[in-house]
Image (cartoon, helix red, strand yellow):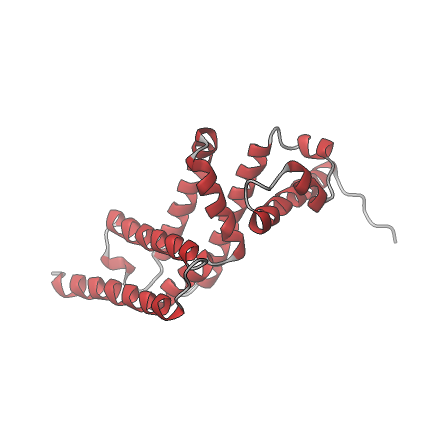
Length: 202
């Protein structure tokens, strides 16, 4: 029995998938600066001509890679928070995702965007959508109902920023004991806020 021929759209999606996957892997392995189109094409098995049929520039490819990393991050968190988690479990999950290898791409792109105004502008929408999605999913964590929307978004973003810094710093000065205690303290603080609001509610 012969294998059905793939449609043009299926071939297009496969090629884009190979290029985006190769971009993520190359940035994670070698860094943003060394993620050249040549290196990406070699890893993906797609020619330069094939790449430019789908992406107008290297930056277009980087933005697509950022969107894919955000989607994977969100999908992983969504899968794990299908049922209500405790505060401590949720914070452990958040840190785990920040340390995931594909999340390195976020850090590389954030650093690159600091001195690249066009990249910074193009990543704004992806970043905002990603953070908004995380806040929505985090609402499933036990005790989240005690916070209003603005306050809860600020709390989640503060935890995100903490783990951004920790993930980068631990490459130079790892301190597992302090890192574990940090998670415990963060959970204790959030639980304190939840309890305080529950006792002060009319």
